[in-house]
Length: 202
Image 1 (cartoon, one colour):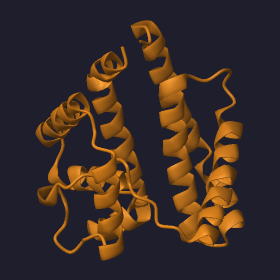
Image 2 (spheres, helix red, strand yellow):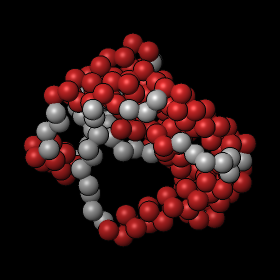
Image 3 (cartoon, rainbow, N blue to C red):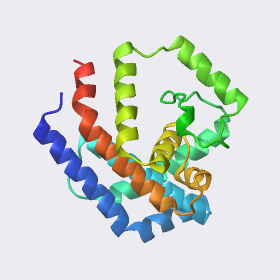
Image 4 (spheres, helix red, strand yellow):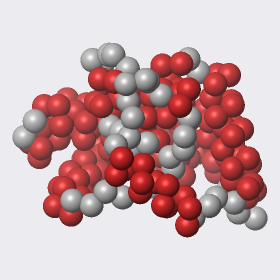
């Protein structure tokens, strides 16, 4: 288990990373645009890479304070990863997804192929009861703490949707709102449930 003091330090570093992402947003988005060739995809690369960096630092910490370089590297890596995935043309099952119809907009539904992949994956990889119970506690807490729009954004992100796609589905053009809300929700839920999650691995 990670000591409380270390976890607090990691949290401060993760917050500092998001602050750096905001400070250097114009430069980082410009890098994303150059790589992807699209302003929309460039913004999406910036947002997703920033969230990924935040989560990685929150889990493992960060040495030094070169967040700008770390973010630039993450944007490049994410772009190349996305390009490789496009070439592979393989639909992978979403390990973190679940079925919460009340949390999803009525007009959104996974396609038939995706539902089959998920059903097959869960049939052969049933989660342990203690993980299921913890997941239920997390979603109950999310319902108590966050608005319907926030919960929908979180559920869709867990299902693998990008910030841009989530913004379109919930009826807002502000992808930055989605990005900020996701970071805030994950930060709060991690603070509440990290000890319980750590205890599962003991």
